[in-house]
Image (cartoon, rainbow, N blue to C red; front, side, top):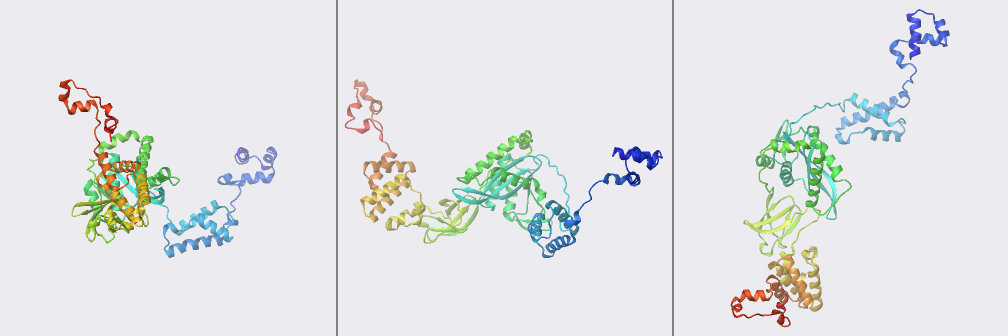
Length: 503
């Protein structure tokens, strides 16, 4: 480029002839003439290879792309199902209509889409929220292994826009019970209630979208009233209006639940998510602002149990059905209507305010909750049905219970063995699980496996005989010491086990 400038200066400024300049720079006359004649603005393009788009980007290709994109508009194709550049590139390449690079195809695809105005270029406003001004809340799906089952959970995420403060919890459903519980946990995590909460138009919160207005559900209004905040709902299908939490859902799913993680329960899962949220917070660039956040938040009210209530009929199988899942109750409630109080992870039943039964809420397909204790009374009258009872088949018996049942079946016929086993199980109502297992274990070791013998041993376990020592005797009979009488209780050890051992 420096030589070109010298040649142009010699001819155009100094007035030297083109022949003289050609000899001076050892260039042909034609070269000198082209350099001098070319406009200054075209000098930068001199020597560059011209674009060869015409060889691969044919009129036929453009026409085909225009047809596919116009077809989308005509058919009203959903946004998430519209053609993507890569998908159409692969299709047309297979058909032999295009043989160029994918990058060049993307350029043409974007150019044509914009020309058809099927996807306009959008601009966004840069936003700046004051610390503690608002909280954005959303949820997304994630797959995990829970209790040996692969399930899809709903991960709720809350973020403070403009700051890297995130919190997540997961639930089996995205119902109002989950929304309510998450607000409890989120406000507890952040240390107070935010004056504004920003949501999308979830059906749990919104009955109907009326232009810029929203018709809220009763639950949504109750949520606002309990925590005393203002709810703000985004424009329909405009997730960028709460971009902080939209990005956080993906971030937390990739970083906290990557690789199909395994958990024993929802308690373990949510403990993991809370721990990860705290670790992220400590590494945050805004960590020094965390202590100031609590100062600007409102007071956190007492936690509320967000429950649904329903009236359920108890059928002849001692079962109530809720959301296609069955739950058992004691025999005396058959034929009655019970009040069900359903939270996100618990299912409780009441009869005129009296507590009846409590179950872990079921959410897997074909999952039901039958408590063995509810069926012990009818089984006592029908012991032959023990082996085939659904509650028995789904119950996890302790090692002591399994050994007892096996010993009883070896000693008695099936009916009597079942009856004795049921009587032994009924003793568990009057004792703790540990006491019952100790009593059964001792009964097996003594060879006294009948229910009456187990009841005797259980009584001794619950009311242990005091150890008969010299100190114990002096406390019980202090007047003996005034006579100078001393007893050595170890001399009676052969006659009395209580002298050396306590039950």
